[in-house]
Structure formats: C-alpha cells, structure tokens
Image (cartoon, rainbow, N blue to C red; front, side):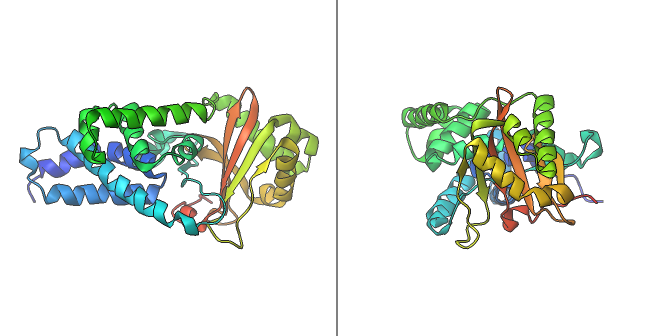
Length: 295
C-alpha cells in the first residue's frame, strides 16, 4: 500500500470550497472543475510544506485562475448571440442524503442563477473582489495581489461591485415551500393551457430570458410582461405536458424538461412577494451536457 499523502488529503478537504469559489466566479460547473484542477497542478509544482495557510493559498490561486478564464471568455463573448446564462446545478433527489455526496456538496455551495446573472454584469476584477471578500471573507490584503492592485484599490473594486449589485440585485430567495408551490402551479397551468392561471402566478413585470447557446439561428429575445411570458409558456406547453419535471435548480425549485436521459432545457425561477418575477431558461446543449436525468 502507498503511504498517505497529507498534501493530497488536505487539498481534497478544500475541494468543495474551491469549487464554490470558482463557480461563483465563472457560473459554470465544468469551468469551475477546470479551475480547481489547475489549482491542484500549481500546488504540485510548489513547495507545499512552505505554505503556511494552504486553504488561503488555494483560494487565491483558484480565484486567479478563474479570473484569467473569465477575461478570456469575456473577450469571446462578442460572438455570442442572444442571452448568456450560467450553467445550472440540478438535483432530482427528494432526500439529499440519498444523492451523490460530492454533487450535493456542490449544490449546497451553489448560488442562485439570478445572482449569477447579476454577477455577470461586473467587470472581472470587480467580480473577483466581491466574491472573495463579500462571499468568502477573504481580506483585501490577500485579494490585492490577485487583481494587481493595492488593498485600498481592491476595497474600491468590491465597493463598486456592491453598489452595482444593490442597484440591480435579484429579490431575496423565497421560502422553498412557497417557491415549489408557485413552480408546480406554473407547470400545471402550462400543461392545462390555462392562460388565466398562468397570469395568476406571474408578476405583471415578469421577465423571461433564454440561453440557447449563442447561435444566431436559435437566439431568442427577452420577453417582458405577464401576458408575453404566459404566451411563451403556452407555446412550450407540449414539452411541459410530457417532459416537464420539478427539480432543485441551484438549490431552489425549478423545472427540467427532459424527453430522455438528457435534458432539453432547465428553467430557474425567481420569486418575490408571492409571484414569479423572472424565469431563466438554459437550453444551451453544451451547458446541459453533463446533466443526467433519472428515468
């Protein structure tokens, strides 16, 4: 038997934390995994015994890797048509204890799609400063070298990000039981073709966004207003009738449309004051490729 490697063991202990940092930075499960793997490779090329605080070191490394990935991705965004939405984290387990522990840890560490959409509006250095400081309590003295600024300038980045988020923040998360009730009502009304029942659960200013993968041919506009969104839901009614299923999407009830073992689309819902205020539909095949649907 090989001797246990304390560095490997300690890295594995921090893996879910590192994945949570990277997911908030990138909004992509697959890219977050790549960032975590790169942080491991950098650790293997370093003198691990000389690192006083491995968790802090790994956190800044994975953040730096994610920052580089985010900058590269943003430079390519000009070729992306339509809406870009984060990659969802989906669980079908009614009892989380019966699901894969690694995946449930990621689900528990996830953040709502609506917040990720808001984070996407930030410049990469602002996003890093906000994520590290406000979400993970990393001191500005440790953030500053990652963004190439002074601690005071890093503080300003986070402050600017905070003001933008507060000005365009998603509503606070609804009670899960209330959200499930609204999502189930939306699903039932769509299946029944009941326009009035849809209007009853939708906020008058509800917004529907759909990410179809950046193709000019498949790109869809954003729909605003209860009547417009209800009309779109009825148009998808045949898919809801046969293939719609309530599941946890980034920790809160949403809908997965899956005609087979792979999902066709995932719908995340934002609820405020007892109404649905936003629906984000991820239908990009690349973002759903790793999502397996139980029979």
